Image 1 (cartoon, rainbow, N blue to C red):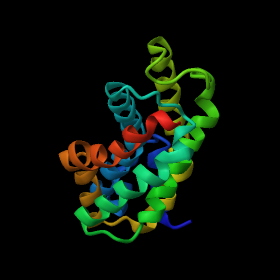
Image 2: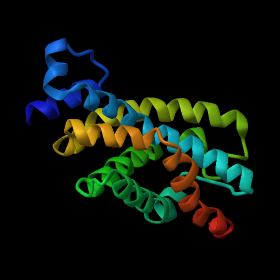
Image 3: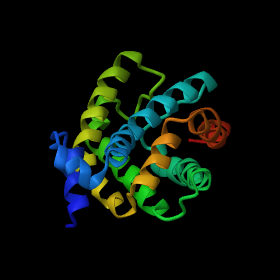
Image 4: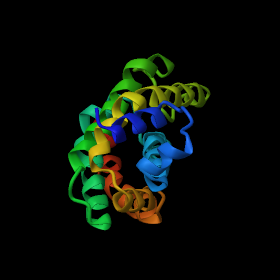
Length: 186
């Protein structure tokens, strides 16, 4: 494992880094790693918000049925174009997919298959708390796969995009609309 992978792993695990370690990886990459780790949680919040408003009945199983191919991959493509970073697209897709599979495996008991995110509001908060814990745990395992694509420039661009209105007000709604249009089929 390269030094940058070790530092990314340590960061993802929530361990504070010494100032010397910050100089090796760079503050832009540490900040970007933090935002990338937050990304699956933000996606879940937006899925719930947009789905419920549209009258959909989102379930965890919809991720494998539709979300990864029809929503995540086009969003990552848009992000790569906006940031002018073509390398690492598949690594980002694999990272987010692995996180969602971990969430499904570890948190599915919070919202069983008979219910959906909009159906039982009192179950949504415990599910999201479970998801947050699982994101933190699985990010420690999965985030290092992105480290070979990390440098100060790419980290700055990725962080700007994941925090941007372009992602949350344009790209996400545009691609999530395809799910909304078909959600009654699931």
